[in-house]
Length: 194
Image (cartoon, rainbow, N blue to C red; front, side, top):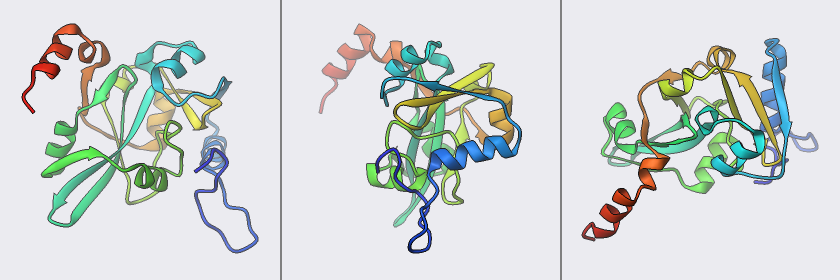
């Protein structure tokens, strides 16, 4: 799906509304102040945060996650964690009482979010995509995220985001990125039997 690809099919001959248009319309409808930040195209959290000029902890990292809850039954959620943290698939699996949790496939993530990977917004516009945020992100005064486009981001007051998005709040953040990249963790991962 490209940055201007429609995410909501419409009648023949009628252009569908993009996630960017849907999001900015929602913010305008509720009178929420936000800042648009144009930047070089970037869909990876760390470099995007550098381009936007904010601490990595203020980035709303959005990961579409699949939890297997039955033999042929899966639930999907949009996990939102601070940009300097990973999603804990174990925490998500336990929260849903599932047997397995992982990244959703690219096709599923883009279909459910209406966004290209790297541009997923911390809002769910679908009933079949639960929205869950780690409480650490809520401690930040302002959050930043790509605006369903690689070349444009939004800065939004965290309280306004929480009020509009109405996420479930649960501890779903895993290790900090610095911990994952530490020499001790790398050695342990390399030494782990396969």
